[in-house]
Length: 382
Image (tube, rainbow, N blue to C red; front, side):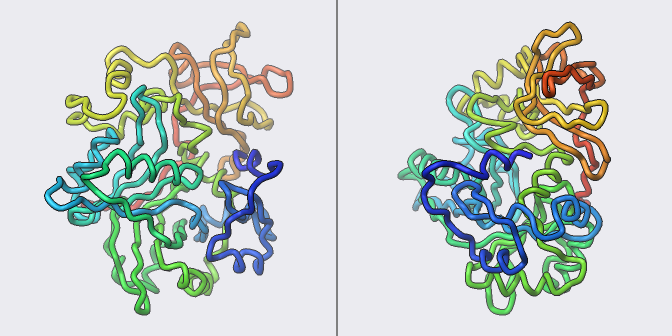
């Protein structure tokens, strides 16, 4: 799994701890270094149990290491949603109140600096960015919009409740979220504390991410864990769940050398933004849209039981290297290995036959569409 590369590093600085650190230790978590934090990779029952529990009931994830911030326009400036469109190719200014957009920060060369979630509240936006990139992201956004907006980094915890039982369980504690649909957020009160509840997540299941004051995180998590259907889930199962869902992990499946077209993320760029071409890297992305990208992110279904891990070469039947695996492992839901990676455009069509070089052996595989496991988002009619 992709977290393996983070488990050890020489001479690393002291690890930060989330507000739920003591809860993880008390629950028997195996703690590892991840993005500068001491994080739970798994609990006593193991990754397979945690993965299946999330798919069938409800898993509680600590994602407090993620970066949260509010962007506020200065007096007389455009609203924050319009300002964000200077930095991302997504449709932010068209968001309705409380709506969330997944988008990417691009650089002048069309590469992806990070992927993030943007939620609109009035003339402000709420940002959630990846842990490993948050310091650089927030500095970049603040500098790029200096004089037009100020960025307020938030000291808040963040937990995710994911799985088919998530909605019923959370509604038992916060009735006000009953009518939320996928990619919608709302500020709510919980025992006098302001919580931001977003109906989204990183597992492919229906679920929520809840931003809350750090001093409330343990109490709130304990309340959810009081339900027999809720269990703590670590980074190991988080990774296998998002892989089955076909979701990218920054620094592995997308990075500064990858364009949104190559990453199969053109669905995040509406026609209005494609036509305007007024975001960083628009020339390169536009060229990929018009003429095709040289490579594409695809799903891969290896034959047999051996998983193809990150860094595995992808070859044509004649042995020519045509790409590389960026994420791979065993799918507990499907009972077979799955992977994703980048291949030359000529090999990107579904059902194309390729070979994966696993431990010096060429293992047959075929290109697949994603997700591997269908999404269960509560899209509603809104």
